[in-house]
Image (cartoon, rainbow, N blue to C red; front, side):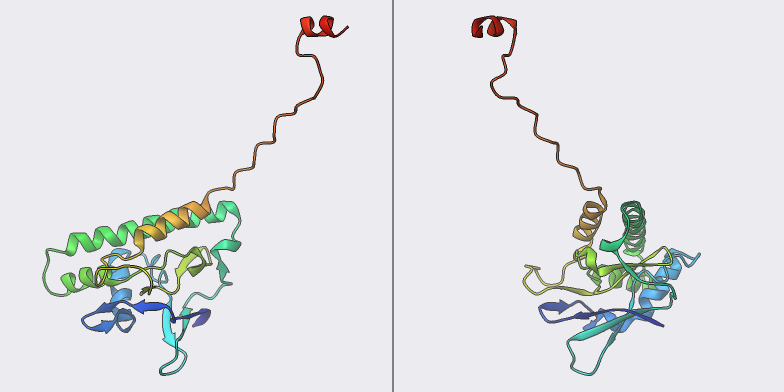
Length: 195
């Protein structure tokens, strides 16, 4: 298990499922991801959270992937674009899965309710890429200052996708100012008037 990042929980609120922090149901999350993506491509989408010590406001995030972790902001433009597209696809699949199971009973309904309870940070700095696979850290928290009426459903998901797609867009080069040459005659009539 490789450590990816450490985040601070101060200033954030934990999302809850069945009166417990969503992080305590990490096994649920893994089971759902395997159900959504039997090929295993989504297994490491959400990093595993672990408190550094009891009562600590620091969380360590790890993954089973063994490659080098690169923060989204440090990716090359084409890699950012590919990662943003992959994340959008994964999040869309998760949401469709949850919505399709909403009218079910038993464990399927539990999984759907659990997914809706998991918040995502809209901060692209919470995305890492390891072996061409995106890994999210600091999930299951939302900013304490945000005005959520109780627990939001899919809290931060749309903002996350919007931010990641925005950050993946290539920076637009500023157009140079038009070249203006002062005291030059504009046409032939002005040239003859000046002589």
